[in-house]
Structures are given as structure tokens and as C-alpha cells.
Length: 230
Image (cartoon, rainbow, N blue to C red; front, side, top):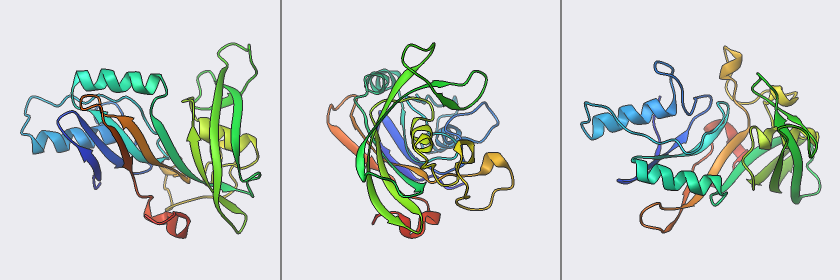
């Protein structure tokens, strides 16, 4: 699998994760983390192994920007930025239906379903309920589908997927949240299915140089005419 590096210096490395590759996985299971470690081991001649901090992740069927830390100092400082919601994330999603109004904010309470990799709607005060907020705007609509820009203000599990589905705009290909249509290349196994959700950009403060950095990842080829100009 080709590795598309978006940024690299002594402290950080970022890549455009293809779907349905895992961000992180146990040894022997293909993942973006493993690909980058192999790349760094060869590039920098590190026979003893490679350190890689993972401050955030993307779901398996989602593509886009993933940022890693190359040392513990950078890892700690990035983790703080993500925990305090100081990192700006922008996603593109193709949703089923006509998303209305054309811009606004989605606010919900949600919680992880015990022993399942999914989120369910909740209410304030319910055990493990957490508030989720996402800003959105419509970029394009055609043939019963809508391209939406999503900016999450919180970082809950499956937040964007669940919030879109609860408004009857499931993300294309996301059968786990009620999508009726498939998306992307044919998949031999359910785990290999992809959905029309792409982490377009990530803006953060460099952990050492303290400058603001924005990384952008082009959408996969199967987005065709849906992706705005690269």
C-alpha cells in the first residue's frame, strides 16, 4: 500500500490515511502506524525500532489526515492540544438526502454502546452521556446526495457519523448508521467497506516551533466529482 506523507520533520510526521486501513492495530495487523514505522525505520536506519506517538485516530472506513509524534515531548504537547479541543479539524462527507438548512450547528448527547463499536443517542444526566457539537455547511447537492463540510467542536466516538444519521442524512456507505447505498470500491469483507467521510484538514500548533500549521489531504479517487478542487 502506498504511503502518502503530508508533513515530516524531527518532531512530527503526518500522512493521508487510506480507507479501510486502521490507524493503529496490534502487531501483525496492517495499520497506518505500522506503515509509517517501517518507512521511518528504513529512511533513518533504525534497527532497534521506532517511537511513534498517536494523539488521535480515524475510524477504519474513513480517509484523511492523521498526525503522529516522533518523540515523547511532541506527543505530550499534541495530546494536550487534542484534549483541550485546540486542534481544528475539517471533514468532507457525502450524505444521503438533502441537508437542510444549508448551514448550522448540530448538538446532541450521545454515549458509547457497551461492548459494541457504535454510539447511541442519549440525554443529559444519563450515565456516560457526553455532549457532541458539530458545525456544518452544505458545499454541493445533486441527485439526492449532499456534500457537507463538517467541523467537530468535540471529539466523541463516531460523532459525525451518528449526528448525520440521527437527522436522516446518513453518510453514504455507512450501513452501521442506516445508509441505504454503498460507496467506493467493492469490498470482499464488511470490514473493508469505506464510507464517504474524509478528514480534509488539520490545523494545530507545532509542539516545538509554536507556529500554526495546517495540513490538507486530497480525497480518494472514488470521490470523483464530489471533492471540491484540490
